[in-house]
Structures are given as structure tokens and as C-alpha cells.
Length: 349
Image (cartoon, rainbow, N blue to C red; front, side, top):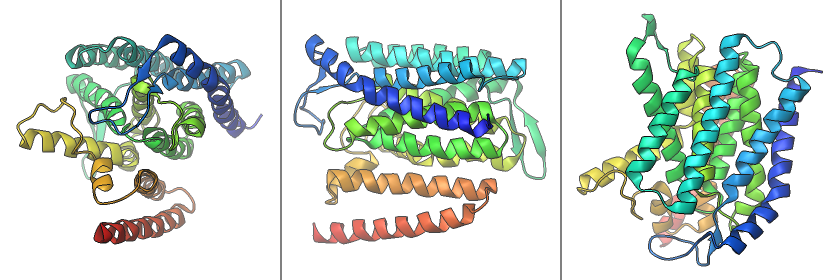
């Protein structure tokens, strides 16, 4: 069986499981009363089930189990097996943290502490940033700095994806686009195991959009956003950062630039106002700013999709993927049109 068939199987199975299970998860959420009620800084107007992350995790996990059973992860060296195990178990850990928060409403500091512990466990299993490649210098080993840098990256991306989950379909779409880009880049970098995880995550995220795009029928909750954020960050580490080339090292940061820049801007804005970085508000995120200039809910989400697609296409071009420059030029044209539309709407409001 051609190796790429496994990636297509992973994508399709994850999407099918999500599409199949969401109605049941929604019914369970309604019966158990686990609803996200409107009010305060929230934008939705009616109570919504926020357990969609259960389907996202199940779709990804079941997909990877089936692909493993079919032989998609065969002939991996021992260190790669540890890394794949670290991604899967770390994803389970972050999903459980988020699901517990969805059900019991944990305090921010408790969530952060548990996130750091799970991220450190993933680092121990091999999901670790061990070196950086600097032009003219070469490979620089991080030694003891590997642990804090890896934990900051993993926990940071978990919360970056969680923070952009403020509009229907936003986090799922951004994750789906980023995962597809990581799939192709990992394959090009000869990292098929990491690409399999990216394919399963992409299928789960894009399948979830069937029920989550505006007007949403269900939310993913913290369980979904934590799981997707960790898996994206971990695939970036084992599939790209561990490749000893400068372009490979910068690719995950470029692919995930939209949530990274959004989170950084929000933290700086809150600090300038004298607030704690983890205290939520309804003013600083990119999607809040776009809504304020007059964009509709859907146009705001689509504009951020175009940004994510643009940085992803730049990553394809920098990686040297055939036709990467063509994709970059096409996405630049699309983004230019989107920016023009935003400017026009802001002038009318």
C-alpha cells in the first residue's frame, strides 16, 4: 500500500467519526445540562453544548489506532515510537484537562499547573526541542534549556488555540488549515509518522466544522481546543523542529503565526491596561477588533482563515515544496482581496 494512502485513510476516518458522533454527544450534553450559556463577553445568543471536543479527540484517536493496526506506523525506530507515544498520551492528557475544566470549571492557576506537568511528561517522552539551527553557526544544542523552552511552546500553543476559540468555526478552521499544511510539509521533510497525526487532526477539525461553522450547533469546549493546540504544537516539534535545517525549525512558528501573534498581542494589551495576562476580556483579540470595525461573524472568521492560509502557503514556499510559490502568490491575492473588503467595510461603519 502506498504510504500516502495511510494519510488519506487517517484524514477520512477522523472526519467520519466526528460527523457520526457529534449528534450523540450533543444529546448527552443537553440531557446532562453541560451548556455554555450566553451573557457577559460571550457572543452566542442561546445555550450551547460545549462537549464537541469529545468527538474531536475520539475521531483523531480512533483514526490513529486504525492506521496503526493497518501498518501505517510500521518500521519506526524506537526514538520515533516514543515520540509518537508522547504526542498521543500528551494529547489525551490535555484533552482530559480541558474536559475537566468544561465540566468542573477549574481555576486558571490550577489549569496552568497541570498543563505544565503534562507538557513536561511529553518532553520526557521525546516531544522535545533539543536544538536550534542558526545560519552561519549551525546546530546549537539547548541542553537544560530544552525542558523550559519545550514546555513554553506546548503550553503556549494550547492556550493560543483556546484563546482564538471565540467565534463559531474559528479555532476548528484555523486548526484544520494549519494541520493540512503540517501534513504536506512533514511529508516533504520525510516525517511520515508526524504527517499521519496531522492528517487525523485535520480530518477531525474540518469534520467538526459541519456542526461548528456559523451558526454553530455545538462548541468544542476547552477539551477540544486544548487537544488541538497541543497536537499542532507537538507535530511541529517531532515533524519539523527535529529536522536539522533552519527552514524546518522556523516552519511550525510560521504555520501557527496567526494564533501566536494574536495571543502575544492580547497579552501585551492586557499588561498595558494593568491586567493579568490570563484574565479574559472581550476587547483585545483579532476577531473582536474585526467585529468592531463592522465585519459580520462569518466574514471575520473567513478573514482569519485567509490569514492562516496565507502564512501556511508561505511555509510551503519556504520548505521548497513544488508549486509552493504558486500557492503563496494565490493566497496573497486572496488575502489582498480580503484586506480590501475589511477596509471598505470599516469605512462604511
